[in-house]
Structure formats: structure tokens, C-alpha cells
Amino acid sequence: MMWAILRRKVASDSSAAWGIRQSFGRSRTASVASASRGYVATTTVSETLNLGGGSKLVQHIGQHAYLGCPINSKPVRDVSFLQTDLSRYGIRSFSSDNGELVDAVVPFMGESITDGTLANFLKKPGDYVAMDEPIAQIETDKVTIDVASPEAGVIQKFVAKEGDTVEPGTKIAVISKSAEGVTHVAPSEEAPRKATSEPAPAEKVVDMQEAKEETPPHKEVPKKKTKAPTASPSKPSATEPQLPPKERERRVPMTRLRKRVATRLKDSQNTFALLTTFNEVDMTNLMKLRSEYKDAFVEKHGVKLGLMSGFVKAAVSGLQNQPIVNAVIDGDDIIYRDYIDISIAVGTPKGLVVPVIRNAETMNFAEIEKSINTLAKKASDGSISIDEMAGGSFTISNGGVYGSLLSTPIINPPQSAILGMHSIVSRPMVVGGEIVPRPMMYIALTYDHRLIDGREAVFFLRRIKDVVEDPRRLLLDI
Image (tube, rainbow, N blue to C red; front, top):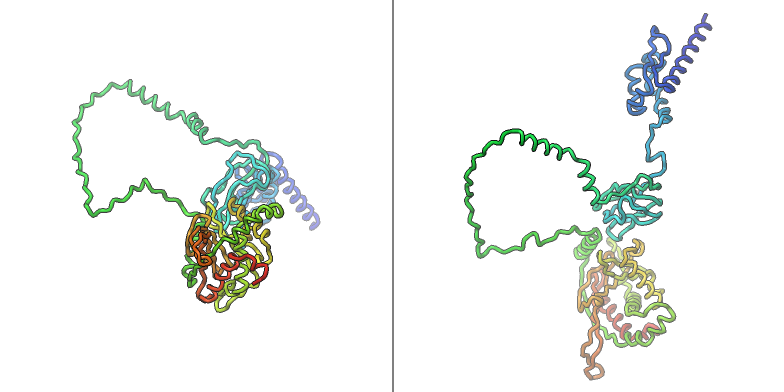
């Protein structure tokens, strides 16, 4: 007797399972089991798709009954297989399943940079881009970084706007690897489309005009126009300042690089005990050396011999003679650097950047000139990296290229001193008891007086003067 009941139970369960398969295979109402035992199976495939997905189907079944099962006999989680089976009927995400769409995201921008501003887009929706071709620029506190396309294809849309603050990994564009179905509509083409797609208002205007023609016109009684009393313009008092109109002013937001430079310079003034000492240099011998060997120098090294390399070598010699100028305060300690990394201040249209010449004490004139030319070119076109500007133990700023005669430069934190170069001017000087014209340059050293005393600062600046005026000292190390 027990064996017969078990066989009947197995047959009933298999009948219920067959009913589930039939309900998904055909768009009709499945009838399984008998009504006396409370079995319900009235959900069809068409009803399932109208519900909008597998999650709605599970919710519907959980509130009423399970297909082919006794009411409230199993928990809802036991029928979660209905969601996974729905993928066979075409309910899936287009962007994740077909693999035709890829995302362009913000790349890693550096260890000390957490976010940036989306400065501008280099392409438009509908444009074709090659792999690794820049499509946008991210402006950070230090450099401008390009966002490259990960695949070749057509830009479908932008998901970020210019001026947005973005972080590494933020999606800014969607790129379709196939150009089908992607069209770019120019702004001038959108107006005719809108005009043709909205004929309804014009028809309403015509109907209203016809209605007006049918109704008898009503004579309107002309009303007398009353002139509003004109207020006499208030005459400004003699003491009231005449400010320019607001229409003649422009408000432009600061770039992230400019804001960063402003913050660092103000922090430098607030932190350091700034003091500047001056001296003047006779450029006769260095300019004569450059004039005599410039052709041979270019022929051998492939780069022009400039004045900056002479000042870099002179600064290296001065830092070796006065190591305290190359040191820095860190809390209650003084850090002495056994290397010399010279930072060169370069002005760009976007702001001031300071690339670094690494291990300048090991370089000759040609290597220094090549490094300066490479870094200056990268800084001008915006391709300089963060690593090429990080660090630096001493800075040289050449305001003479802009015609500056004299200035007091500001220290570049966390350094302790900065050398300012200026323009070369022919001035009368006393040489051997006679007054002769000489090409002279003022040089300035701004230093942190908390660390560097006036004695070391003057000796350092005097060493630079001696080396520049007589470059033979570098050969003899005197």
C-alpha cells in the first residue's frame, strides 16, 4: 500500500515538472494536476514577458501560487531558476552582451592626484576614433592628461560634461566598435528637424484664424492712452564713484593648475621666513665662450650651447660648497640631500610648471642642454608627466627671457632656496681703473632664513658669480 502511494506521488511530481516546461514552451495556459489538491498553473509566456522580467514573475508567483506545486508549499527562493531561464527568451542587456560598446574612462593620473577637471572634448559624438587616440583632456593640479579611446570605433555619446570633476576610472564616453546606426547630427541640422516634427501648432493657428473669420467682428472702443509719468533720472552726486559697467567685464573660472600654483606660492609665503640677497654678474667670459664654441658644440652634440647650462653648473658647484642650501626642514629635523636635482621654472600658457633635471652633478654641458630642451618642449605642448616634475632640491627661474631686470623669486616648496636670473644689460663698469661697457646681469637668491643664515647665502651667491665670470674654475675645481 505504501509503495503504491509513493509511485502515485512520483508520477504527480513528474507531471507538474512537465507542466512547467510546457508553460514556457507554448503561449497558452498550462493545466496540470487536479483542482482538488490546489494546484494552480495559469501563467503563460506572454504574461511573463508583459511583467517585464524574471523578478516580476517570481514576485507574482510568490504572492499567488507556484507553477505545478501546492500553494505555499515551498519558499520563494526555490523558484529562482525562473529568472535564469528567462535569458533564453531574449531578456538581456544590449551593452553587456553584444560586446560592440566599450567605455572610455579616466586613466590613472598619479600617486598624489585624486581627481581632475574635464577641460574639453577633442572629438564629437559621431566622430570616428582610432585606438589610443585622445578624445578628451583632463586638467589636474599639475599636468593635463589625455583620455584615449580603448578601441577603434565611433563615439556614440558622452556621459560627462566639460567642467565636471572626475576621478580615475570615471566613464566619460561610450564608443561603438561598429559604425552602424550611429549618426552625428550637427546643431544646424537639429532646427529643421524640430520644425518639421512639430506641425501641430501651425494647424491650430489656422483653425483659430478660420474661427475668427466666421464670428462677426466686434468693434473695439479705442481707449485713450495715458502717459505714465516719467521719473526724472537721478543725478549722481559729486562724490559717487563712476564704476565701469558690468557688460565690459568677463568672469572666467581659474584652471586647476592656476589654483594649485596660487595655493603653493601663498603657502610658501606663510611658511618660510623669506629673505632675498642680490649680486651682479659680468657675463663677458661666458658669452665669449659660447660665441667661440657654439658651432663646434652643435656639430658634436646636436644641441645649441646656451647660458642656462653654465648657470646650472655654477649652481651645482655652489650647492656642493654650501650643502645647507640643498637641505630642507622636516618637522624638528634637517634633511641633507646627497644628490642635486635642479628644477627649472618654465612658463606655459596654462601656468607655471617646474620640470626637474635629475642628478645634475653628474652631467656635462651637453647633457644639461639636452635635458633642458626636452623638458621645455614637453612643458610647452602639455605632454610633460608628473614624474618629470616631482622632487627637486633647488630651483632656477630665468625671468630674463621676458625682460625682467630685477625680482625677488618665491621658494618652491619643499625646497629651501631659489635662484633668480634676469636680463643682460650693457652697463658702464670700472675694469682696471677704466670705465668700460660690460654685459651685466643681476642675480637674486631667495632663501628660508629659518635654515640658511645670511653668511651661507652670500657665499653661495658669490660662488655662482665667480664660476659664471670665469668658467675655467670648473675645470680646475677652485
